[in-house]
Amino acid sequence: MAVSMRDVAARAGVSPRTVSNVVNDAPYVAAGTRARVEQAMAELGFRPNAAARSLRRGRSGLVALVVPELDSPYFSALAARLSEACAERGWTLLVEQSHGDPERERRLLDGVRDQQVDGVFFSPWGLSTDELRERRDPTPLVLLGEQGDVSVADHVVIDNEAAAFEATAHLLSTGRRRIAAVGARSPVGRETVRLRRAGWARAHAAAGLAPDPSLEVPVDSLHRAAGAAAAARLLDEGVQADGLFCFTDELALGAMHALLARGVRVPADVAVVGFDDIEDGRYATPSLTTVSPDLPALVRGAAACLADRLPVERGRPGPEDGPAGHRAVHTPHRLVVRGSSGGTAAVDGARPERLP
Image (tube, rainbow, N blue to C red):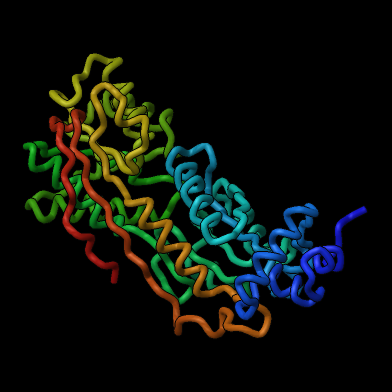
């Protein structure tokens, strides 16, 4: 037979109400009384009814993360770190992948209320800012990634344009002058692509160079195979490039594989820079120069934003009583210079410029 609060109360010599106060972390229970009740619960093997506690508090303890791809090293690392941050706050993280499909992103966002989720971390690839603004579900939302309009929700992001500028400027500083933007046109990650292409173009303008449209290389995904296909296409079409700025590390690793297979030396003939600082790049030959987002800072900022929007208990402050307006939290990045661009040292980039 299941152990009840009355059983615990009898063992501890207190009332069932006192046991309830301990279970619900009421602050006004004396330390000695709390200790007796907790000891009685341990001795009897009492387990509080989590569903009932959630109903009383107006919280389920569940939060969701929606990312485009779980098999992406960047998003899997993000999910792992966010899971740890949620556990520290007593939340359980549910993870969904959208594949960047707008309709699936819309369904996932519209269905969180039915799942009794307290809040959502969301990295959109398919939905535009205008489409996100049409969302009617009141569940607190924190955007991760490149959707920069804070009229929609709190937003935690690195400055992708500044990071792309630094990556391209690094290649230009090594004497490269024909730098291909691998991923400048892509059917996924539209805002990511737009901002990174803008940084690539701005670096050329700052150096007094006009980007060659033939160096804007389209891809059909942001994975290794697409990077390899892009590099092979440049070679087959005779497009002269002495540097590649790849919009993800996976694209960069695929491109390096294709270049080396065709006898093109990296970095002697073509220097390569990626974006994301995934683990594979550190062990590639040559090791991959990349933009490294500060994932711990991004995760801390996201968790703090969501915590400020969640109701603490029924009748206590909730989303409507949280911070006025939505916030843009900008987290750092750095350029890590390695062998693929001719360097070996890790270099901290300048503090990211704030998005307008």
